Image (cartoon, rainbow, N blue to C red):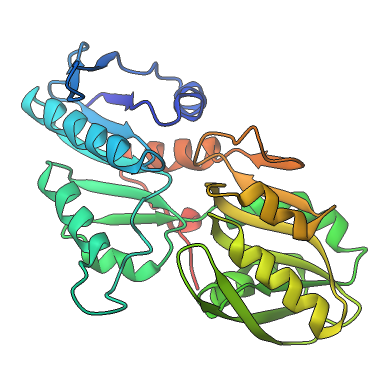
Length: 312
């Protein structure tokens, strides 16, 4: 069974890098918007009998990118694809995995249902907001991690510095432990309360941060409010300076560049799961193309992905 890689429009440079590493050209497709806003897709290469991988992040504009992925899947399935895998470096709606109050949807579950019903046999995602999301899917989910790739730029520097890896909230505690093991550094946790989608408050820090250089780690940076609150809490807790902020997904929306000024001078490292934000200063982007290429190659050849999958 031949391999076919087809990309949506969310992050073509990443898809091109993955295709180059696989030694396989990107499949041809046409995407256009009708005058009324409807999306129309057409697969122009034959995918009949092939092992097809659709690469598309569902970041902003979330609904447009998500629906594009679903339409591409339906087109491939109706065109005779033998096996169909969604490769979603950034999975939108992952934070809406439960009801915080009454009369709300569990949006992550609904999106998972839509993806499953569109004809995919498997989904590949990178550093989901919550590993529990795997239970929302009725098809296999391969949960890859970019932590080792993102920690690599800090390892030489970490050996000569008094670092502390900081989780900006309790949800990132296990993630911080993984970075701490790679960087041979202690970990600390900021206790955060979310006030709204754009505002958070920090109530204190657990762990010894006094006089250390802090590396704040999270799965994503959205508005930057969590990072801003964590930086202030660290300063209050013992004068720890923020040396680096590391996250897999860099959305940088709703004034994030301005908020990140609270960590002035810090290294800012993200993966290329989303298009690069030109407005963010000091941004270092680590490519996950080798990670995705190895995963796709392994799945195509029915090999184990154990070394690529995130573990607590």
